[in-house]
Image 1 (cartoon, protein in one colour):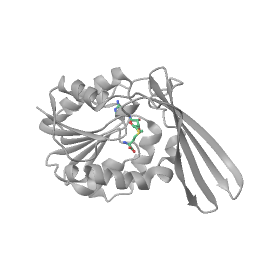
Image 2 (tube, helix red, strand yellow):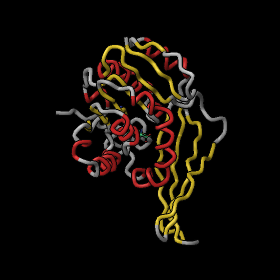
Image 3 (tube, rainbow, N blue to C red):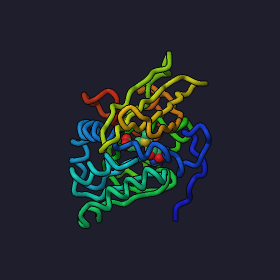
Length: 254
Ligand SMILES: C[S@@+](CC[C@H](N)C(=O)[O-])C[C@H]1O[C@@H](n2cnc3c(N)ncnc32)[C@H](O)[C@@H]1O
């Protein structure tokens, strides 16, 4: 039985972490899925392919890293995803897999610390998730990863932005066509009281007509590579020299 937390610190309205991403889940894969799939393969494909015991996907979302784990390894995969809407997309994706592949993946419908996993994996990936954790949730995550990894296991951690944006920054989400409709949007990042307010604006257009528009806002918390490495060291993780992407910190559990 899982005990589920009630509030999402990453959501400015304080809604439940189970109900976060209610708007974004619909747009997540169509607007970001293709680029994300290429990025996770590039960042984690080799490590995930080296897994001998298990792969842990922390903040699985709609399942990019989970799918990579199933494709690149032959071990069990644990997908941890507290938000119902993101997990629905993940479950639909997993349901379409052959039974023998599906038989290797376990979905945990809660945060990592609530899942209480013990020694289930030798490779853990936390992609695009640490930034969404406030400092106290971030600190709760580290001992939970240490417990979930077997000794000598690796954690590959996609780092949060190192600092607050100086001025509001707009990042477009390249439009995608589905039948008559074009889906698009952008994210707007701005600094607010030591956090990064991250607003996602989505639109659906039919020619020049706007069919619908939606917005969802999240908080993110900046943290430097050195700060994260120091926090992890307190939980027995040591950095692994890595010539890979500077956006990822790789650490080994004692
Ligand atoms: C920005 S999404 C990224 C999803 C996925 N990793 C990707 O890149 O497509 C962050 C995800 O982390 C989940 N999450 C938030 N806090 C978490 C925690 N403490 N443990 C596990 N997952 C968490 C959220 O529900 C959300 O789906």
